[in-house]
Amino acid sequence: MSNIDLFDEYTAAIFAELYEHFPLRRSIASEAIIGLALDPADPPPRVPHELRVYEATVEWLAGSGFIALSGNGHQGDATLTLRGLEVMKVVPASVRDHNSLGDSLVSAVRSGGAAAGKELVAFGLTQAFRLMGQGVL
Image (cartoon, rainbow, N blue to C red):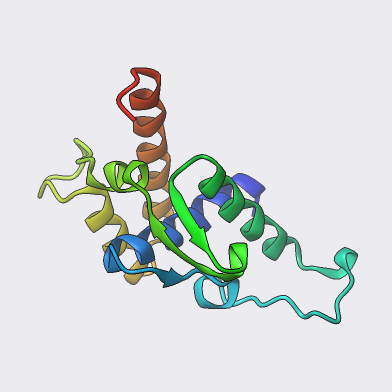
């Protein structure tokens, strides 16, 4: 899988977990979200590529203001920020039942629909950047 595909998949899983439990903080430790854990005995060159992409995804989501982290960064707890919550409240035109992006994402992730989750993440981030450009977020 390409880095962007992994990013979209991991972002969908993180957003779904945080949206479903908002406003409570939830663990976004890699083993909780993608089933991979860092072995402290592994030197950096031996860290799996997927885990490095996951860590970079969490750092990017936090640095871009979509999630707030506490504890040990990507191994700690997180919650959606106002910006992240606003993105999850967007209703895609393609969703006939008019569920929010967050509700649709939770359903897609639960049903194993990785492709649908990736499309929803791409839509949500596009909307977020559009709103940020307009000074709304």
